[in-house]
Image 1 (cartoon, rainbow, N blue to C red):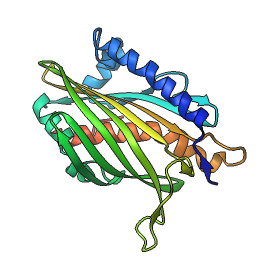
Image 2 (image 1 turned 120 degrees about the vertical axis):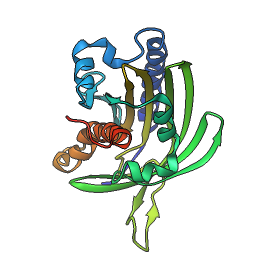
Image 3 (image 1 turned 90 degrees about the horizontal axis):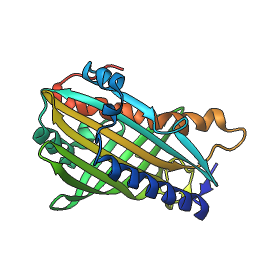
Image 4 (image 1 turned 30 degrees about the vertical axis):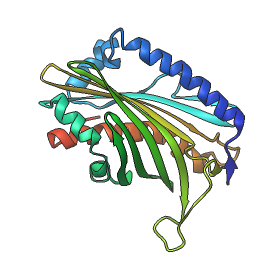
Amino acid sequence: LKTELKPAALAAFDAYMRSAEARLRYDERGSFLWVDDSPERRRLALEGKALAEPWAAKGEIAVPDGLIHDWVGAVFIPGATLEKTLLMAENYDNHKNLYKPEVVDSKLLSRNGDDFKVFLRLLKKKVITVTLNTTYDVRYARLAPNRWRADAYSTRIAEVENAGARDEREMPPGKDHGFMWRLNSFWRYEERGGGVFVECEAISLTRGVPAGLGLLINPIIRDLPKDSLLNLLNATRQSLVGRPAGR
């Protein structure tokens, strides 16, 4: 069932992002890491677990003609250094190998210092399969000798019909099935305690769930934001220590 990104949904997402960005910048002057707000979170991360929790409510906020999803997660990578972690993160041509099967293809489009333009072809599979061609502007910033952040904003998301077939084609952005209209992620890196803490807050905009289609659409709209975040954090840890984090 196709749908369309409506101005009201986009306006609500933009307003939510402004509030989230203000909060994130404020946090940089405080504890910085989300895990430091909870001794239990920090303990679990140090024990090797990948964490993911909704930032507010149940991880989703209903807006006119859409849903905003906001999840935050963390992982600790023992023995890693900030330098090696950032080199891995910035090697976008290799993300298709590090983050498969969810990242089908990846490419660095351009770089200007700490600013990157990136292409990722994403595969979302849960009950149904969705392929998305996505591009992002990513900006890295050093905040302290042992702290960096990276902000990634989607600039284009196009759903792909008949992916991999001879008649493959992109649907017009915003005029598709609505499984992903926006995806912005905010990364934090801190080296301490013999390793590196990696955190990500992922904020996305999707369609709402129409009546009668919950069993089909709920898994990919409501479950995947958390699942994707955990998979991403586990793969990041595995690429640097050679084994996945526990759950």
